[in-house]
Length: 378
Ligand code: GLU
Image 1 (cartoon, helix red, strand yellow):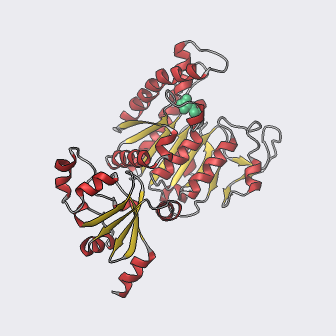
Image 2 (image 1 turned 30 degrees about the vertical axis):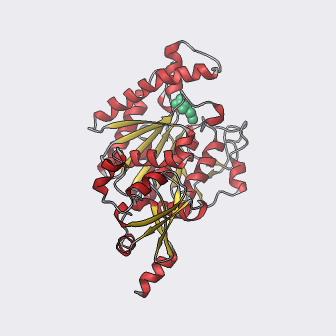
Image 3 (image 1 turned 90 degrees about the vertical axis):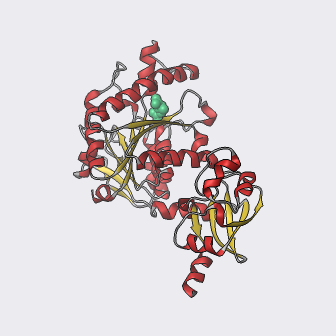
């Protein structure tokens, strides 16, 4: 309960079966309740991202693909039509609370490939800073099977990591994880809290084919694994009640998965640990001092650039022969070289486009231990 109250940035995942009725119309009772929930959260100063399915379920009825499994191109065509309805429904419902929405359609590459990841991330951060509620879905019209998230559970976990959410709420047609399939065994124990997703927990979700719930409990557990590693606490709870988030806040039954670390620590670890540096940026003492104060790296403080990197790649930052930080660079190597030593205001004239203000944004920078030790010695 307090986990929701303490959260600042919350991603809510909504499955098609909650939002779309069997006959392909919008479930307005659900949507109205959810909008009240979103308004409640934003009134509390929280930022909210919705990851919503429903485009295919809405579109297929409109296109006359009434029953049975759709062919890929039929589901893509359905999504193309349905996504417009989906976005309008959210727009109308949230406008009643004075909230503006934005539509973000992602493909797998947008979260797995770093250049696109940085772009998607900064768009989302800018929207959130403006008080907008982004509505995210997979870009189903272009995503084919090999390059898909496939289910919005996984997408919602990726989005939670990307925006450094501290909470991901997966609204389901079941109120969490049970030790056994509750359809076969009505006495199955409900699991209220999971601190570590062990093989035993994963086994409770059943196999891919034997899963219960819309996207399947299996994909929800996989999503919880991803999101908790990225620093978000995850709740799987029932969306079949009016105002499900309010109910969760009041202690409704759910399975809560504990985050393994803070989103900021997870991101730092990701930048420092899992990525190999593709280049070296040597900076002057003034820039080094600014970095230690938690500021961004501006082009003006750069003396030399080595290596071969693309925008979004990781680079080591060197001052006086010591690696003091690592970061994800906002420019390709040629452009970074062209603007090195220059003031940020000059960038547009030199490159012919208005790029990012900083060479490396402070959110994309991690100081190494060495730099912190040097500072303590000063
Ligand atoms: N992106 C699909 C849609 O909006 C659904 C994916 C899912 O249900 O997980 O219809």
